[in-house]
Length: 150
Image 1 (cartoon, rainbow, N blue to C red):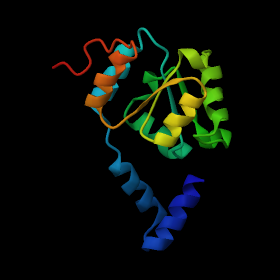
Image 2: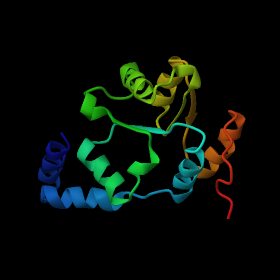
Image 3: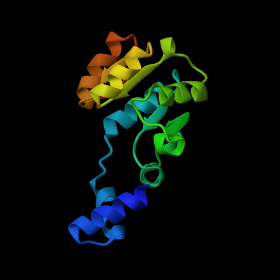
Image 4: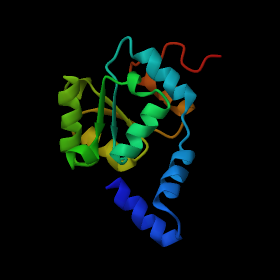
C-alpha cells in the first residue's frame, strides 16, 4: 500500500519512488518532549501507539529512532485493514493492551479520531503540541511527572 502510494506520487511529481520515500522520511520530526513524557509514564501506564500511517514507513521511523521500545503495543491500522476512526481498530488496541474503554486515554491530532474514541467511552485529548499536552494531562488525573522540566 505504501509502495503503491510512493509509486503514484512519484509519477505525479516526475521523481523516483525511492526518492519520494526518502523525502517523506526526511520530513519526520520527533518531539523530544513527547518522547520524554512517554518514558516517564511507562512506569505507571501501559502505552500504545495506534497509527494510520503506512506500515513499512511507520515501522522504519520507529526503528530508525529507537522508539519501538517506548510502547507496550503498536497497532498499525493498515496491518489490520481497518483505520481510525473505525471503532474496531480502537477495540483491537484495547484488546492487545488488555484494557477497556473506561481505563484508556487516547491522544490524537485528528478531531474525528478523538471523537470516535470518546464515543467508545475513552477519555481523549486533541493533540496540538507538547505544551498543550503537558497542561491537559493533569486535568485527567495523569501525573506527567517531570515532563518538560529542564
